[in-house]
Amino acid sequence: MISFYGKILNSVNLSFLFLLLPLFIFLFLYLRWEKYSKDPKVKIIEAKKDAPEGLSPMEMSTVFQSNVSFRSISAETIYLAIKGYIKIERIEKKVSFIRMHDYAFTRLIQKDPDSDFDAKLLNSLFRFDPYMYVELSDLKKIIFNDFQTISDLTADSVTKKKYFENNYIKNKGIYIIFSILFCVVSYFFRIDWIFSASMFYSGIIILVFGLMMPKKTKKGLNAQKDILGLKKYLQTIENDGKNISVSEKKVEVFEKLLPYAVVFDAESSLIRKFEGIYESQPSWYNDPGITFWSGLAFEKSFKDFVLESLSAFSDSGSLKDNK
Image 1 (cartoon, rainbow, N blue to C red):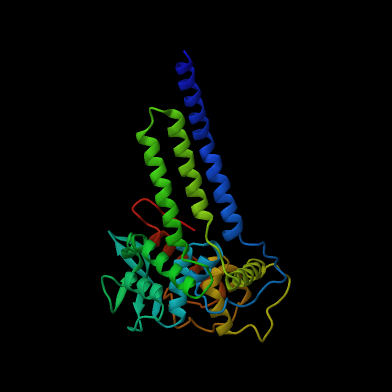
Image 2: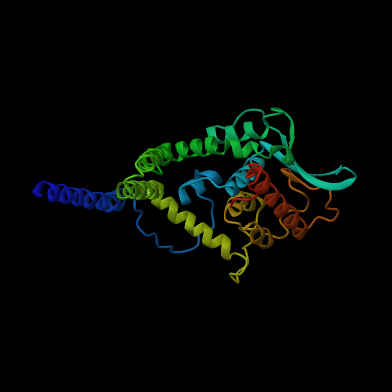
């Protein structure tokens, strides 16, 4: 009889320990996150009217939100166009007697950029015609399939530039592996529901903290502050009640800010605020359909390109947009 109750007691104790496992893992990972990965709150002192020094749009997106977005890839193509690597052009064509429009990229500089992620992006854009011309509609699925490689290369870049303590993508991968391992064990031991549930919820906790673990350096935190200041400036520029000064209203200032405005979905506000800086279409962007050049016409055409590129770059066959 004693042996029987002893077995029950041992079983209860073991089950109790299994029930506590997710709590132990949560506390351990929370303390680790608090000590090594939690970024202190950044106070915005004032809006910042300049692009972050030494960061491209994709790098800025990575420092700001720890990932590359499809919107930042669209911004990066504009950044490369302004840098002179490619030219963007709106084109008209007929498909089954239906008049449609598309956008085309023409490569102007054959030499790859210095950064590996930009070189990869260009090689993805011109995969089927490495030296000449590609239409946006032909890029569906291509950028999506190369997205992880582009993200990894961008993470490597900001890590080497000392914005993060370590490569957060590789670090995240370790947590994901452990999360999958716990979930697999929970699946194969579903006869014991307490053990199975404990392992499953532990795996979910590991996954959540794995996504939260990147830690910025002091340089990264300062950049975060500058990026927040730039975001504030770009998102309030149209309604701040102030005019752009004559010294600021220059093509080079506008073109430096434009790709970063795209990351924050603020390109229209920036174009309206810099109305009149272009007397004709810029060298990096052309829309033959604009018969009378104006800031409003450029804004409409450019916004359409951003939305079309978002749709094409994020297209996996079913996914249509990802910001």
